[in-house]
Amino acid sequence: MKQKSFVAHRRGNPELVTPARATPCKTKLLSDLDDHWDLRYLQPALRFFRVVDSDRRPARPGDAIRAALAEALVYYYPIAGRLRELPKGHKLAVECTGEGVVFVEAEAEATLEDFGDPPMPTFCNAEGFLCDVGDARVIIGRPLFYMQYPNTLRYISLRACPLGVAIITSALQYLSPPSIQTYTYRIMKQKSFMSRRRGNPQLVTPARATPHESKLLSDLDDHWDLRYLQPGLEFFHAVDGDRRPARPWDSIKTALAEALVYYYPIAGRLREMPKGHKLAVECTAEGVVFVEAEAEATLEDFGEPPMPTFHGAEGFLCDVGDARVIVGRPLFYMQITHLKCGGFVLGTHICHCIADAFGTFQFLKAIFDIARGEAKPTMLPVWKRELFVGTSLPPHIKEEQEKFFDELESATCDDIMVTMPTENMVSEYFILSQRDMVALRRHVPLNLTKTVTSFELLTAVTWRSRTVALGYKPCHIVHLMINVNARGRWKKLPSGYYGNGLMCSVIQTTVNDLCTNPLGHTIELVRKAKDEMMIEENMQLRVDLLPLWREKPYIKVQRIFETCDIKWIGQDTLDIGWQRGLEVEYRRLVCQI
Image 1 (cartoon, rainbow, N blue to C red):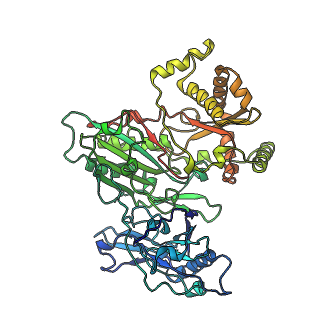
Image 2 (image 1 turned 45 degrees about the horizontal axis):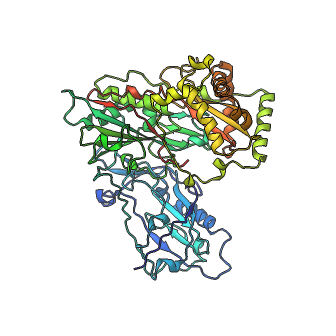
Image 3 (image 1 turned 30 degrees about the vertical axis):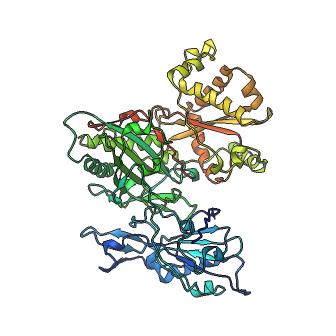
């Protein structure tokens, strides 16, 4: 059978569709048949529709189906809720919360004839017509229904949805009935790295009762650019000794449950507030995802030091599906992968709205402290998100900022880093040895040799080199953005704060000024950006500007180079006693934002 590949999909962002009108808010128990363990997964299906020549076809069929879906959910309102596990017997119940289902609109360069007669599920890339739901076996606390409606460019209407059909007939009157041959089938995504074996995902809840409350995020947490699940990998080698438990991975899972007693908001779920699309954390203690896996590999197989370029790196992370969907789902995912050498790989995803890299390592350290035998985390967490909530701005500053926004919006975009699709870019990792750093320091003026830091030197060299490589014109304005950790710099910020605390400082100059002056000049510019954030008033001003920036999520600053110093992130503190982390850090693994 001839197979075709349909890879030219253009897929929109997932949307949550809620019932069109108010629905009952109550708990509904499942039957014993519904609650069978073999049925605990998201069931995919494809159905194909052909166009009927009729004046009844709406101008935007996708909108008509979306509206019909919202209306259908008024009657099928439990589908818009979320599954919860009852305290006893692991029975499931539906909380009819009206949180909604997922709807995606997409396009494909295809016709119905391309799929065969009748259409068969054997065509290549069939999963492209389904929403990316991640691990289909995780069903608690997440949407119960996903629909993808692809409009082909040749006006062939297709529909793909798991878990059945609940759309009122009126929305589809302009379509013929579905094909006689309709197939429901499971699409199995098999990922492997050296015969890796992965267990079923488990929800780990706090070890003891925790407060049930709502917690607002800060303006910095709630920035649109942070609404995704941030991945990370850490590598650990075995330490000789008799302190190693019989089942070490159980001790980590137990420590995770204990750590969630202190970091209980992480065990909750994000909800969108009625006004302003602001996010809040509902501290529901629903838990986080834990997966145990095995790999036929040793630490040496990943290189020295381990790099994220090794084949199958994503196999050491939980399958989270679309990392941009963060509302109503777990906020933290952990996968422990055993290695043949006795070491393990720790793969995590954490919602960036909840914690930055420094806060994430603080949480991981709390888990490791408890796994090592401590009664509680050595550093107790502090929420205090109100410290990063902006207040009113002086009129002249607000006016200047609005003028800056107007200039950005009216500017013609000619920056290749903005116009080029990310899928056409190549990611490379550069490891600089001590010898390389010595060679770079030879180009630093004598008056800066003893005081310049490695971060300042690398930032200056990279900014200049990148600017030259991108071929910007001498008259172009280029920007440097340095993300500075407010911890230890802002007196108002207490120890133990684990939310987003990186504040940015931006400086600008011309390409000619940057590239024709000596390296020492660039280092001074880098220092200027850093020093600006050492002033308390400047830090507070950045906080007060956050609400304005949040209102302009689509604005992009051209010719900007962003950097951050994560040398003191706390990676070296991850020590269980019987396992010790390698001095390598892995961040931003192919995460679409």
